[in-house]
Length: 143
Image (tube, rainbow, N blue to C red; front, side, top):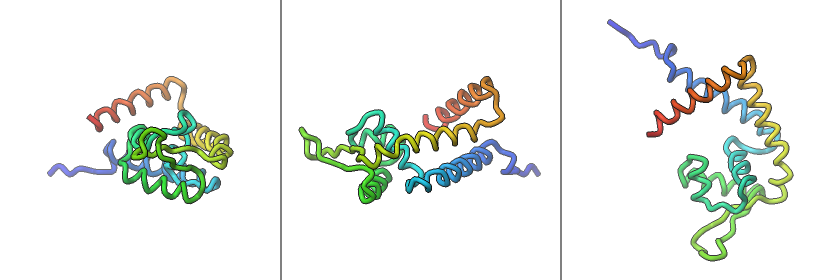
């Protein structure tokens, strides 16, 4: 009988890597009073402040209700503010507050440190290969 050893599969390893990465990110972001995912909202807004909630959800690859809950918490913590669109009040736009702008350098430093720790011991060539392979795996799973 051929029994699958789940711990030897790539899928299992990807799940474990994902958990470890999330935990490391969570530890780093806790010092900034942010939760995992909130830094992604702020990084997206730093590229284009005033995005609609639907734009943010699409760019972050999350469901609208998930983003709404995250934004509610961030608004409560005064990191973002949501305002109606000037031309269509049904649309809500998300803006960074001064507090979020002040956090930006620390968020970028956390992300850089996480990236360095994640890729430690890999050559530049291995990093490029890993990136290409992960992009292919992502494409396989999202088509």
